[in-house]
Amino acid sequence: METGILLESGTNELEVLEFKVGENYFGINVAKIREILPYQKPTPIPNAHPFIEGIFMPRDMIISIVDLAKCMKLPESEHKASDMFIVTNFNKLNVAFHVHSVVGIHRVSWQDIIKPDETISTGKNGIATGIIKMDEKLIIILDFEKIISDINPETGLKISDVNHLGVRKRNDSPIIIAEDSQLLNALIVDCLSKAGYSNIINTTNGQEAWNKLLKFKEDKSVDRNVKCVITDIEMPQMDGHHLTKLIKTDDDLKHIPVIIFSSLINDDMKRKGELLGADAQLTKPEIGTLVDAIDRLILR
Image (cartoon, one colour):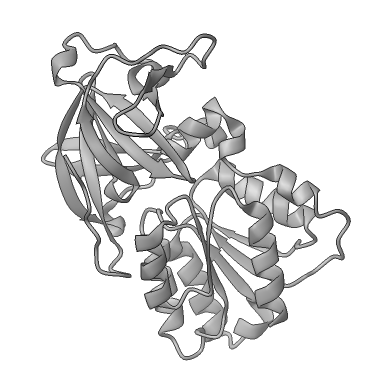
């Protein structure tokens, strides 16, 4: 099954692939998917992480397989004939996720995705980023970046890139961050603090960031309170593309530099970001490059 769905830019919508592990329904953003393949017995790797089921080579590329049932402590599949591999690409990695069946694709608005509260998404350990109610069932959107980061932390943010910058001068330029992952939000703030940027305004989605900007606009304090906006793409309530579109079509805000910092930066996404007026688009492991972009855009 090939995907290849490219939605119109800035509509605040996404395509979600619904799949099952055990009797539970989960979802993944179609933008992360390369293809969906029938299950085939993987080649096991000695001493691999317990969640890594093995590897396979569908074409000319060796791809690791993550067993989502093991990862989420759910029962393993009893009938592998209907099992599937969801082959993904994000954070410049190709990874396959072993699921028990694929249900279908739904087009939904980020506004209809409910952000899990703290009883479900326990701080930095939660892997649920959103919940969709559909046909009297709940579909849980999983944080696939967090799953991979737990297996290999270096796939998350390359903290070492910031350490190599050395001692830097303090910069009080106010920066708004829109990032729904508590773990990544904290890591980005920590990295920017090490790079000298200490005046960070934290928000957990595009809607929160937009509300802040509207308040500054109402108070006529935009230039004093915002020098740069850094936004993820995937976020409940309002995604980063829609946030970028709102900023860049507002006469009072369009001069503010917007950096899209996401695991989803590929050629298609870059074209979207360019059409919306993003000033820079960077993939999430490259935290050192993010600091360079902030330096350049704030100085400009």
